[in-house]
Length: 208
Length: 123
Image (cartoon, rainbow over all chains, first blue to last red; front, side, top):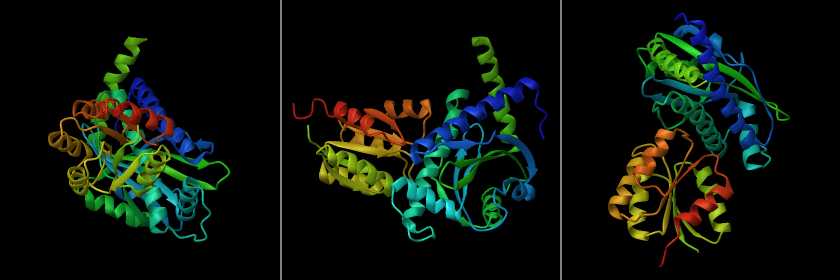
């Protein structure tokens, strides 16, 4: 893991809190419910150890919305919800009761768009505050086990041997929907992110 | 002012939402799910205004915007996107968008942007 100075760690935490906080605010607006967001954490893992870190739910089928990003730093932003929560979340948005507990094509599309709104906003905070442009890809929905999903990340990025995970769990009040937001970066991308954060932190301190 | 509006968004959820808002305001709406149909429909249907998503597979929204403006330099285009970056807003503005709205779209913001974009139509 890259060693961060106290200032760097503080600045990065502040940036992440703002980004994830905005994401939670958007989710609250979309769902009409209060969101409880756990404090985001940063950790470094070998790619094969990601499953343990990201296992918001130890068992069962999960639904992932993945949005790749490129620019000064690149990686994947991920929204992960358990299958039942995904159906509930899509029902909340279109305000209709679903008989089925399966994620049909309509519910899948709603969830993909929710993921797009949440993840793009989260990544956009990084771009805005660091005064960089992050190119955001089209969101993709994956269903299945966590291991299968992580396999797809490895295939997509052969260089990704070690990953830095910035993640937080959330819960939508009165709905039973729980999930996880994560940003996965390669170590080299994190180094570039830290450089940008250094500059931002310097400007922020100067501005004070 | 009632207008003909082309909605371009690869998300049917977003298209449906915007269509509901616009039709409730009395506008006539057509839809395109992707960039190529959007460019065809723009040429054939000659809408008064286009509501354009930016993050789409294939040709992205910014490129579509440039092509729309090449086809009609006065094209009235409102950009809607989940991308909240100021740099993206600047790129859209430079490419000729009349308004830039972030998703989730609020009815009042859309209404204001549409009315502002349609100012001067038929004058």
